[in-house]
Length: 217
Image (tube, rainbow, N blue to C red; front, side):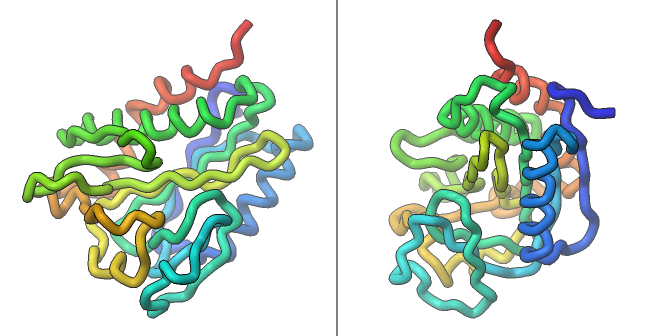
């Protein structure tokens, strides 16, 4: 049974419907808040779609060729689709320090650490939320996105990591409102990692992520 410091680890096979995932997250958040559900780390993959965060600018939806969903999370437009590992993290911050900024930083750090396990040097960028690295042309490029929501101190949404998606799908939006930097993926960097290998890297580094969120004495 999961404890406060050991969330459920769930991996969904195939493609998960986005609306169903939102409903599932909401139900789990309510259960966690009510003390009736365990915290969860949920890894999944979505069919092609765009999501709009609470700061989304309609002008940044350039070509709505895929369904567009109101995500309810912070941030602007982002893309989800096959070849991208999505992680929905549901933790009770009321028991982990009540610090949303620390949570976002820890989430970024976790994905960066997992990428290091896969042989990719990634980093944060000052003033830009997300996970950044250098592409094969030496340009700074985004390899992972962060988008969170906190409801009654329970977290929803989380991160997306580009494993081997169709990068042309990102051209339908201005990803996260940042037009001046390209998007990349593990495959585009020459790293042919499977989802199983990505998940193993995330599992190997999750303890460090959770340790950063332990409530102080």
